[in-house]
Image (cartoon, rainbow, N blue to C red):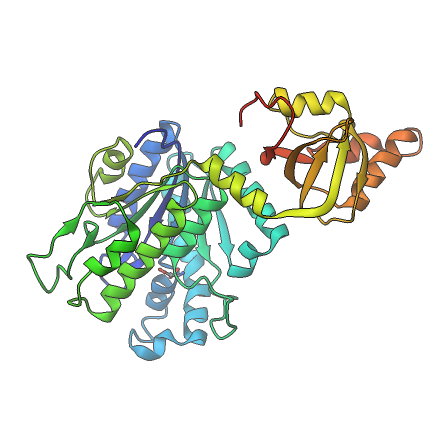
Length: 382
Ligand code: GLU
């Protein structure tokens, strides 16, 4: 696996607790130590960490017990709201000791499916990693109420795949306390075989036998689904054991560790497909020849100064067409402003004495990373 520059690392509860009923700080520091090493080598890391519910449960002295009742929505919300701070406190201390700032991002299903918040989260996460901050993501269990159908992501395997997709990660590493995917439950059958490479995800569920307990099987199913989601959007996936010191370095260096899933498409193809599938039919921005050239030939973003006019009504986050001065569609892209704001920009430009132009003209209208070139002499970096 090459070019593993942007890596999402998912840390599961059983790993972080070492199977106990509280966070295991030795395990956490060993993982952080490895991640610090990768960060220092220049990798862009995002962590998706579970463990909030476990930390909260323990800090309540297991007052809400580990039995069935502790899994109801109210109990989980109470435990998560207490435990999330504890979890972040540990990450902050451990990364802070290495002068690496961390940031918390708590997400729900709605945040990711809504176009505007999707764009905001993507921009935020990319800004953070550019600033060499490590974002630590978890599901916002406090507001993600399972009873509201479709509200929750439900598990951090899926969340980590959605995050990988959102930020075009090269690699997603799902770390647990098992070596990878097994044909049978290795706790029940010591002869269970590790599946080291998955060629075809469709076949894999059939290979996972009935010997699994429901819980174990559930864990495998969410991991396979996460792998399906991530590989279909251009991210390679490895499921591996987080308890083995140095596993992260070995995985990233391309060693055959755990279970590997290889994507068949690039991030760019995936993003292109995603943007193309969401193109809005009647909204466009018409640009001058300078802007058209910058976009099609120089790999540039669309800046406010290149806009001549716009058509249609759109919100921030909508996928609009970019049209050149000969009326050719040259690109589509996700817009950072509403049509009203862009009209204000155009008006402001024509009356520079009355409007604080610089203020509203400072950001890209469509960022290069959120754009697909569809016409013109596209010899830039598509
Ligand atoms: N968000 C949960 C927690 O922080 C974990 C969910 C999961 O591990 O899938 O405890």
